[in-house]
Length: 507
Image (cartoon, rainbow, N blue to C red):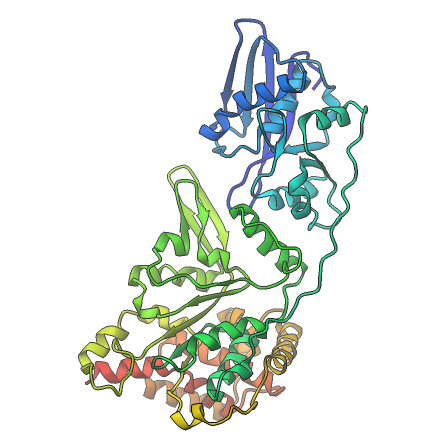
């Protein structure tokens, strides 16, 4: 726009992991000096007028002593945060004739301002860069945000430390220097290895299956059998994130203000909330919706130790994201969608006293303890694995290096995942029900065997689908083109907790 006293500047808001465009319009007119801001600004945005005024004056630029009206559009989108400061300041400088209107046509501005005019970093810069790149605009931000912003390849980004430097760049008096990106270091393999755990070969085998097909897994056994150690080593069995996944995970970290480590930005997240966590901390929430643990574990592992100790409403909030791979947080003024494509790894004791053989719990108490995990949630856990106590002799004898190492496991996982992606363009746990007949087809003998066993075990339809997917993964690990009876038998053996719940419910 070329109208005198008017300016239009572009910036971004943060809604979940998205960054919708916000157009800031500034109009300067005659009348008593005043600054009015409209467009659903929250307190942190309304306070921008004081920061912007001081920043402009401390840069020895003119702040108009006139009536200033600022509109943040769209008007129905709530605006929160201090990252609109820089765009508002540029809008005032354009509307007052200190900058030409053309400088804002193909640029976006995002940064908080100090009273002295310094640019300060803001959370959520990565979604803003991705959106600006898609809109084919240049983004000007704080210098401290540039390392994170430069993770987006080929993005047009400039950064500065001070409002005056941005002003000098836009007036072509002193261009902003180019940023020299850091070198992304290679990922280091975690020191924790499967070899550190004595025995438990069946559980290690189940971990490989879970990692290969991205299946949810529950480890059940008495205290001290290595359940937590096994769960923590699963992260070393997963391949690094690809570019798209890494950016998606980095965007989540960006909006939470955690930042992104250049040396480990391709490493999958591992989240382990305490069993006293609330439903809001797990699923996300707040007056301005913030991501919870299910989103912070996006493309990684959510580890829930002592699973029955979590509140049942807390656990049940996992049911929807485990199925849909995302979660909606609804508030009166907005509804936000967060990604939640996580892999659940859980651990539990088989009884409230720790062991089934200690004689301290009756069948009724054990049944009540197990029933804290709802049936629909248990149906969504593909592998339920028994982790028995090791004999004392196995612990006192000199340790032998035996079985799979984490390096061996990741080779099997990568090979099996490559087979799955080539065949169906997704991992087995992500197969929809209507694709099971195509990619998990059974022969007549295998179908009859599975029907008889499912009827005997009284498993649900969802459990049937889970068994099929796990059997398909076992076949892929063994590079078998077809699902055979031994694959189905092994998959059915990983329903320990369901069988235990049925047994104690009947005694």
